[in-house]
Image 1 (cartoon, rainbow over the protein chains, first blue to last red):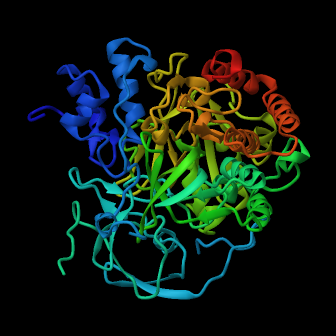
Image 2 (image 1 turned 120 degrees about the horizontal axis):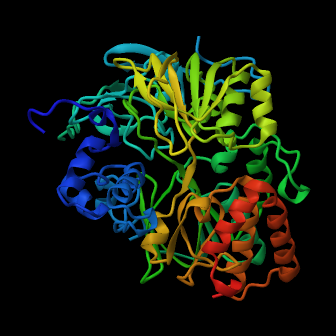
Length: 98
Length: 104
Length: 364
């Protein structure tokens, strides 16, 4: 990134939670990260509080365009609980009736 | 005034007026409405700055599924103010970065 | 650990209808929603419904939750949990994890009906995260639920029914809609809604999109531009529109996290808004313990959501051996109602999508 002039893509936010821009996604795809899971692991896009609800589709669209494949061929990442933010204290307290 | 009155179809519940603080400033809201609604009605649009890029963020999804409106409420960080009900005397603050947990 | 015959996740139009059908059958039913009150998107729908009386034609969306809740609350076999997140489903054991901010609850359900609805699609444009860029659902919530004006001058993006209806609701709330932009060459929603906007003097700009939000800390203007048929901006067509809200109504995508967790076979169907579970005609997914209802199975609208919810409810109860009065006749009627709702040009697209997502032969 250093020394590069700011582009319009630097102002397009793809993952709001982790502050990842379209420019960063495009750079990662150019570097060879070709699945949503790879991009997620290297950038954290999709690992924030919303669990990829906003960025997943935008990244899928970018990958499809860059790889010249239809979106249905872009592999979806793994979906794990919890799918909504949970307070650690709630889990630590354990089940209500235990 | 940004609160709606005389809507052709809807009547809005008129709850008890409460006072809370936003970054130290007193603001009035309606008890039980989401904190973000009270802030919006008071003209506060910027709820936080994003943790890495420092970009201004505000109200966005309104249903607690995104991270746009995370604020510190009564010392607890990462509260989704678009769904958190407003209470009398709440201390609402703009959050810095990912926020700090209060150590008890 | 709690146990229940059927758990229904989401108490919007689909979940409410599903829970009602399950409740009538006598099955123990647990209805969960993360909001503090039932209704889902119905609580914002101030307009009167079309269609048949069975689906509340002539009733405003905001009145429907009370009508259904009145019946549900009289059923001792139906448990209701509001303000409760269903944060996970563990397919190997059929256990759901639920939490309400204070308690962490495990619930084992023989059948799960997933009626989680849909989420708004994002749009990538410059400064798309600036305060004042709001989802259409958020604008509706702020305005119709909390009675707070979202702004003074709104640019609406998207001419589907949501964009059209929310624009009209803004005007009813005395908010100026400066323009509505639509990237496609024609209006996406019902022309009857578009006509209302035209009469109110709102310019509807087809083949136009928003390319940039302007403003330091909050939106003060939007740059809109004309796009060609491949949705590329035509050079020199950019112009600035003063506004303090940019409202995004560019479509919805099914909320299907839980179905991925359940290991259901999924399919990407653009006509239905994105990835949806493959299902049979009775809304059963490839995981036989899982049913889908409403927008989570494909984005349509509240009337069809209530129908698919009822179908899923009847079918799930029946699969556990619970007697549902005149089940076959009811299912046939519901399917006929769905077909009627899905007529017309928009319906044709949906029908094609549903066909894509339905298992061959109609049953697993």
